[in-house]
Image (cartoon, rainbow, N blue to C red; front, side, top):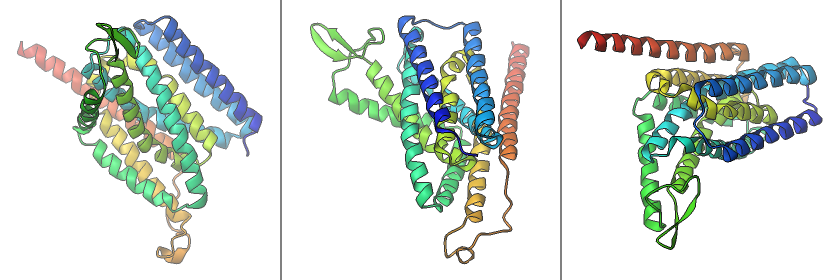
Length: 330
């Protein structure tokens, strides 16, 4: 069933208004959100996504709604991985905690712009070159293997540190922050604040995550609107989730294994899908490979939820055991 154009336009207008209101709220009232406040916001954004899925089902068919739910769950799972890198960035640049909301919101907006561009490019490529699914699948399997390596996030931050050193050689940057300002005056001289480096670093991080996540959701659906909507809803509650999880992120030591399983599964599913719609002459004579299993999106949703649940529970059990062992040794 085709999604009505009025539904797409109305949805984008409403989501844009919510994002702008959220940004203005942070700008007018910079503060450190409490656990209760963060929880309420996360519940609000999750409820908003579920409401959107219901409306999408009513006006555009329940198959589209199911694709959105699966894509949203996938992107939300992968977006949680962003939080680990965000924590490292905030720590590396000693960003004051009361300013972290603004930094995260700007990072989310940068991510939305980058992902929007990748989605437009991806849809155009898929329409004219379906074998791209082979490349997407191989890339995701490679990313899954890389994700399973514990040093992955540290390597990303070290790469960003090189760019930071390069920036410091080229432009004048003050030693301290001046609120959320990008420019300040030190001894009568106009200078950039460290905030400019934080934004650039987060932008680079968002670019890397966009390269990982967009090919993954194209296995769920190639509908550009659903793909972009799933990304918006996955990112909208990310800022509040950052403060809600807080120190818990350090205890989720096995989460990257869960994400690796998800990426690997989606990568394999992409290759199987590519074989189903095969157009390459050197594979089965350019004909579709009929015997290849067709994995439904419902199975994909189950794998995504199960992987995140197992990784989270295993992490919390291991952390609890370590605490008990430390208490006994004292």
